[in-house]
Structures are given as structure tokens and as C-alpha cells.
Image 1 (cartoon, rainbow, N blue to C red):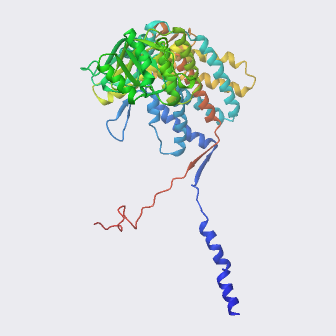
Image 2 (cartoon, helix red, strand yellow):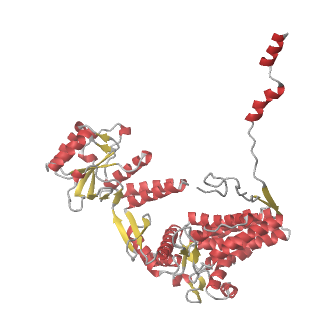
Length: 577
């Protein structure tokens, strides 16, 4: 009896004890409570947030637009005129208003990503479309039908814009586009035009901070590689620590050269023709490097070796680019080729080679122009398909290197605040210029959008659904707002200017700088068609999303309870050591 009861006690825990481990193992999480606002209340609050962002951004529009000061958590406040930078800095306290602000920031951000300029115009357009759209939705119109009308009108106007756009003619128009984008700064306009003349439409304009007060443009001739000499023993200009050769032969390979036997046959051939040799390989090390250095120091051969630029697949692509520019044959291990079997015919030629500690510049004339064009077209196709910012930057650099054009604009200013503002203006001007070269130009000053609005009534007749026609009306009214805002910022009654321009030719608009109505194409007030198109499509997209919003969910604010028991240092509250 005793044994039995003992067995029961040890081997069979009670139900309460058996359940304890399971209860301990259960993880309980509590979701944050949400506030939900519906219908007009949600849309009204979001619209308040949109208006706050748009009002802050709109003051910068036009040649007489003002600046906005952004407080920094450290350092000097930023004084800027750039719409997207202002929008990105805005965070509102009310979560629903902030949701609206984030939507309008998306318009500016998307326009900046696709065209690089026109962010203020896009923000003003989106605000007006949302304003007129909400009036109709509140009055009982169907937001889905209105959105459909907005989208159809947008597609029609984009096609019309392409018809009206014309290609950029000459350096003077490039200067005008850049100057207008930089806030009517002719000096910046001239600088961008000069730089683009030198590097071409496929070139790259880099913007850096200058050490002086002046802003200058440096054009790098030839193809620059971000790799320097493997050994300083190759240096032949001891004063400047450079390797400088003219009419040099170029070996391009993705192999690692370590053994002497790999390189000797080629060195013998090069010695016979008595020309310098530049070796671009994955690496040159061991006996092979020692042989090159010894022969260079003895004056038997003029040679320099550098490591191949880039990494992985990008390295192969860059080596192929170098081979095309120098007219060399790429000695690739994938194809079973060997360095020891390389002949002089497989080497490229560089008119001038300059190798520093960390960079190499090749100036080559041997390239086949058709091969370069084909290569650039191939890279442009890759560029169109990628959505990575890093890949876009690297592919653009490769195009520029192939085209032989990289210009560096070194921005100088008296103060830090002026320097930041100037850099942003030059960035906008650069982006606007490339956009103009890509898709052509239209009259600036909001005139293109204003005159496009005059085409909407005829298009509205083709819409059978009455609420889709309301969407077309909304776009028509909104398209007149950038011109009105430019005039308001210039101290003139905007609506009066809009009425004066209606019915005029497409090229005629309001020149706010000189307060006159004139042919803006002749006056040099130009906008890139791509910038106008991007602003219109992004504004229509966000307006449609906003109008179809029925509820907004935000996290409830939870007040942090003060920890009365312990201080931050781990001591009881009120006690110090």
C-alpha cells in the first residue's frame, strides 16, 4: 500500500503541476492600440498636412521665389530653395496630418528621382488636384470615377506634351535651361553649358566642394580608372610620383600574373618594338612583379602594372570597356586564353598614360567608334532596366568613361549656408539640363501646363461618364496653379496673369523676372519636357490615391511613465554617489 502510494506520488504529477511548464512557455504579445478616422474627417486632416508641406515648398517657386531656413540638429541652419529638400525635412506632430505630408513628399521624391528637378511644381499641382477633388468627393461624387477621369486626362496631356516639346538647339538653350532651374543664375547656366559642351550628352557632371571661394569646372580628359600602380618602383616622374608614358601598349586581362614564364614571351616582343607597356590584370605578384621592376630599373623596358578596377562581374565589364577604348583584345580566362600566348596584335594602344598612386588616366585614339557606340547602347539598355540607385550611378559612370567625358564642378562659397544652397541649385541645373537633352524643351514659367489646360475641354467631350468629366475638370483647374503661384511670388495678382495668358500661343507665357508677357522660348525661359511630364504624372497619381482614401489608421500616443524607483545610473531615485 505504501509502495503503491509512493509510486503514485513520484511518477504521476498532479494536473496542476503538469500544466505549469506549458503555461511558462507561452509567449504573449500585445499589439499597439490604433486610432481610426473615417470619411471626410480623415481626408480633411490629411489635407491639412498636405497644405502645410505645399505652403512651405510653394514660396520657392519662380525666379522671385524666396528661401526656406531648415534647422539642423547640429551646425549651421540650411538656407535653401530646393523643393524636395524642404519637403523631406517636414515631420508633423499630428499622425494623420503627417500621413498626408508623407504622401505629398512622395510626389516631390518621385519627381526628383525621375527628372531631378521640378519638385516644387509637382507638389503645387498635387495639392490643387487634391483640393478640387475633395470638394467633389465631399459633395457626393464617386472618387473611383474621378480618379479614372484624372488618369485618362493625364495620359492625353502627356501625349500632347510630347508633341509640343522640341529638341534643344545649341549651347545658348542649354544655358537657359540650367539658369532657370538654378533660380535665374546665369553664371551657373553658363558653367553647366560649358561643361556639357566638353563632355557631351553621355558625359557625367560630378559636383564637389571647392577649397576656394570660386566655383570652377575641371574636365577630365580620357578614361579614368580608380586603381594606381602596384609598386612605386614603376614611377618615372619622381617629382610628382607619377608614371607617365606616351604611345604605350596596353595588355588587358582578368588573370593573376605570378610566374615569370607567363610574362617573358610578351616582354620580349614589346622590347623589340621599343614601346612602353601598361599591364591591367587582376593582380601582378611574386616573380612576375619582381621581373618587371628589375627590368624597369635597369632601363631594359618601360613598364607599369595596375590592378583591374571593380569587383566580380562589374570588373569584367570594366575590363571589356577598357579593351574597347584602347582597341585591345580582352585576354579572358573564361575563353581559355593565356597571357604567355598573347601577341602584339592583341595589345591596345594609349596615346597617353598617367598612373598615380590611386588613379590611372588613359587617353586613347585607337578605339573603333562603332564598337563604342554599340557598347554605350548596350549599357543604356541595362540602365533602363535597373531600379538600383547604385547600379544607375555605376552604369552612368561607365557610359561617361566610354564617351570620354567627366567634368567636375567644384563649388565654392563664402559661408557654409551659401555653399549648401549653391550645391543644391547646381544639382538641379545639372539634372534639368540632362532631362532637356533627353526629351526636349517646352516654355517655362508654368506656361506649358497652363496652355495644356486649354486642351482639356475638347478632350472632356470624349468622356461618356459624367464623373470622369469631373476628373478632367480637376486636372484643368490644377494645371493653372503653378503659373498663378509664380505670379503671386512675384508680387502680382496670379489670377489676372492666368486670364491674360489664356487663348495665347503655346510659347507665350509670363516672365516673372521682368514682369511681362512674352514668347518665353525666345526669351530663354525654358523647362525640360521630362521635368514637366514627371511632375504631371506623379501629381495625378498621388491625387488619385488620396481621393480614394476612406479611413486612416494611426498608432495611439502612449505617454511614457517616469521610472520613480531607479535612476538612469541604477541608484534608487533621489540618491547620488
